[in-house]
Length: 320
Image (cartoon, rainbow, N blue to C red; front, side, top):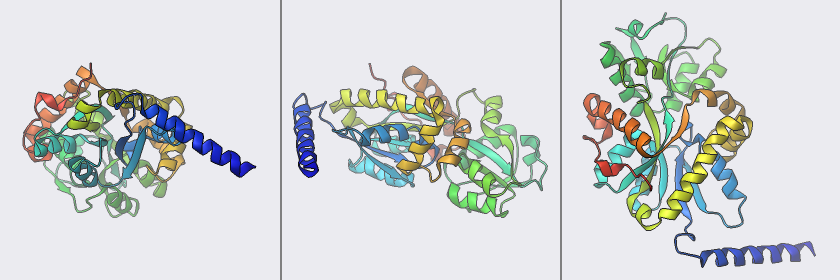
């Protein structure tokens, strides 16, 4: 009897999905969303949990560790919407002739200078002449721009290319001064209690650049998808905003969702890290102003990081 009920339930679900699909082409879209593990993906975890509980899922989610895999999926058309570092989004826009647009900002500054205590670091000026380890790409570009603005000369070592690699080295005492993003800072300190956070690099950034202009993560959409499915894009933003809000409104549930989605390994660590992750949801004119300020800085300090030039005005997808 139970088996028969299960079969009838499945059949009814299929009928409901088919009926819903006849409403309109836009309403029937199953949006393919890629996100990254770590902070850039934290805000997506609630959406993933909700989507799994729906009879007719609206989204197909993929969690990746490498931004290059996500950009490749956007280029091939296998992905409709994705979370990416802001510099990678700008570089992809330039590389593809504007095939992607930014929908929302999802992460402000998440970089911190961690020390093993052997070096006394009380201000950013204390880094002059030092060797500081930083993950390659976005963190190292940002850190280099910041140090240049302060007039500090130092050696930025990117031999540990990925944050996870550097985190392991820091926790093992192999990198005395390091730039790490959250939640890696929390992970490293849980493994090595001797580590301390010497500087909040977002706070240091705001002292010399436009406050609020350090934005490290965003959500992009393929232009072709956005133009063909405006209602699906609007629905995504509504769902995503609610998912981001869950991080502060119910951190414990959000952390469990993060672990369940494979965005981060341990819910307990994620819960500790969330307050320092600066996850946000910013769209429209505010998005364009803040991201535009960041990209302007990077175009002067590290143009290669954003694809060699500033994106055009059409980089910003502002829905009406």
